[in-house]
Image 1 (cartoon, rainbow, N blue to C red):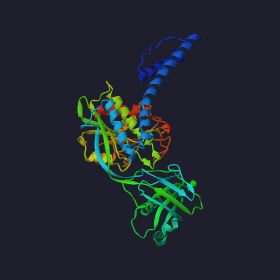
Image 2: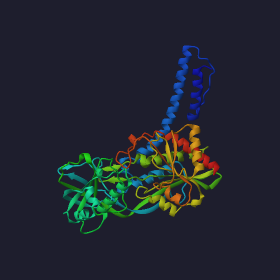
Image 3: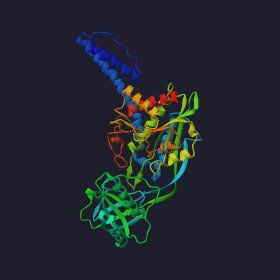
Image 4: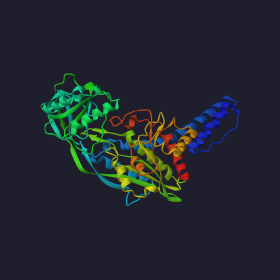
Length: 470
């Protein structure tokens, strides 16, 4: 067969695998120009079918992202029931996929504390009103407070001199303390810790002699935000240094907050019961909540963190629920709530499991899966070497991801409490690509899902391996 004919055979094989269409290999020499044109057209049509099928798979993940990140859900936080709306959407998907639940519903309910900012959030420097989300963020632990005060710089030298610092914060009249983040080298752990401890003290320390009413932190770094389970005494505004007038003398602000002592939350849990070993379980987890809203207009979409993980989890559920893919062992899918406010959902589950934790053969936690240009990182890969080698070998054999990188323990996602209780587990996240994190720019329109399909294929193969080997 000619070189062109060999290429024709390879494309047919790929198309057969991806699209499940029947290809008839024609053993011809393709001598004539006309035959070449016909063959090329045939190849294009077959490849178009493959692209169409690929697009259809992508569309499911994209629809999940778009729904979870829409303005209606307001960042999947605690303002306007955003987190609850996301949970109900996932439960509806589980029902559509005809998954089973463990109790009377897909929900496992619990409660937390949360400070929310559902109302006005304003900051003006002199006569210039800054744009929330873009120019500044106020920490989520801020209280309800309004005022117009002089701006007083607080230098690092003053902070490091205990006597001078004590005199300044107790004897300076009511004011807004101004701190320049650039005075602290955040690449050094000791500097970062010093700044974090300083800000926590100024926000939350309760002493009648402290006169400061608020703190402004000038930053040249991207503005990040996180929800808070507590309310502090003084608001901390994180402001882009480029928008802050150098000779600003006064600033005014207005904040409306609402501290909730019993905020309802929930995990959303479903399963595909195993055909032969239903009490042996492989668990796939991802958190669905995000940061919610800051004020009336600013919300954090959370496409990469972690609508991408939920999209992957639901895509896996869809695959294994398809006839012919049903597993021998039970696969459990857990969408955790309240991860962003302290891993509360996964902690509650491990303290109140719906099935014995010792039944879990292996757990795969998915958090931040929207890129993959540089491969994936596998937390606990050094702990569970056998499973890591299986995952890495599957990737090498199928040539899916650029790299499957190994690292040790890290307690920063929902696998953490399972790990502490002895459940074998990986936490997997993607590497490279866009770097939006905990900001208003983590939007589905800018999330490429670069290696989403390849990673899904790898996870399917890995779960199938676990289903047979454990």
